[in-house]
Image 1 (tube, rainbow, N blue to C red):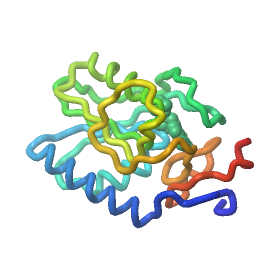
Image 2 (cartoon, protein in one colour):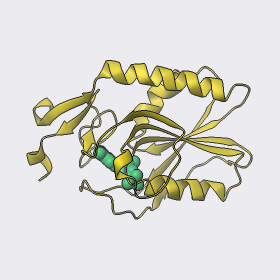
Image 3 (cartoon, rainbow, N blue to C red):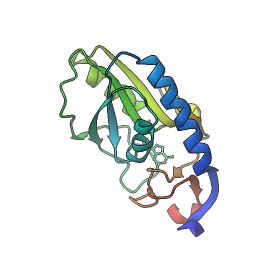
Length: 178
Ligand code: 5GP
């Protein structure tokens, strides 16, 4: 698997360090509250698992699954819900936990979708952000790292369902997906 990686962008140590900081900030911002963290499957699962353990306040969890890129590295821009949340988010503080923001279309869709359920608030927490790839104006509340427009894998992020179990974030060699 390592032979398929061109370059490591973020090491395990760097990832854990930034997650500790994000957890500290979220714990501070939501002190006295009981937010519900909604993890976007499957990519967000590894991030959520570390992030929630770096948070010192009481939180609840839920999961949502959306249509993905299939085996491609380009977004279709079309979002479809494959699994909806179970929780009632009326008057709740919602934190969306995402692996990566690319065009921002998924988050725009999610934000609008959750707002229809009248939550107290909706904030976004993503491990990675590709600011140069945004196709719309979006406000992201918590960002781990900004990255370029390269297609990245590892730490939950896949290519054709593989590489999610890499403990770091890396760039695949072009020949793997071209
Ligand atoms: P957006 O709607 O912001 O264009 O896309 C968000 C979703 O696209 C992410 O949750 C992720 O599943 C996928 N995605 C975007 N960029 C990458 C990338 O570089 N690598 C991988 N593995 N998935 C990506």
